[in-house]
Length: 169
Image (cartoon, rainbow, N blue to C red; front, side, top):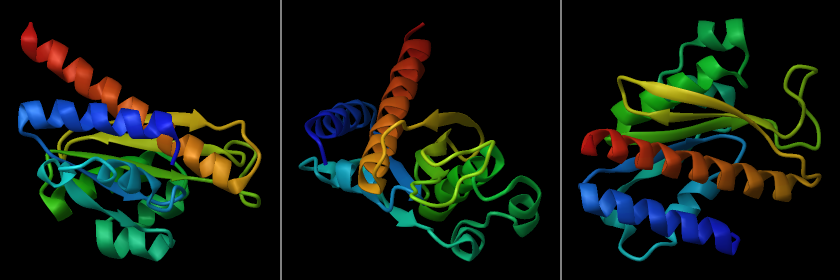
C-alpha cells in the first residue's frame, strides 16, 4: 500500500467520521486492497463496515446477489455488474455507501473493449450508484491492482466531497 492510498483513506475516514456515515467494499480484481487501505486508518471501525472479495463469478451472485443473467448479458467486467455489486453490498452490510470494483488485473484476461488494466468502479448507495470506467496503464499485476485501488479511493473521496457540497447548498 503506497503513501498516497494511505493518505486518501485517512481523508475518507475523516469525512465519514464527521458525517456519521459508513462504507463497505465489494472487490474483485483488487483482491481486498481497498479494504486494506481503509482498515489501515486507526479507528476506521467507526466508519468502515467491512468488505468482501467476490473474485469468482459465482460468488458475485451468491454473496452479493448479482443476477446471473446480468453477468451473461453484460459480462463480469461491466458497468452493470459493478452497479449490482455496489447495491448488493449496501444491502448485505447495511452500510450507507459502497465501493465496488470489477476488472482485469492481468497478465491474462481482458478483451478488445476492456483490455488488461480496465475496471469498473461503482460508488453509491443501495438506491443510487455512479459507475466509472477506469484504466491503469501500469504493467505488472500488483502495480495494476494497487493503481486501481487508489483510483477507486480517489473516486469515492471526490463523491463524498460532492455530496457534502450539495448538502451545504
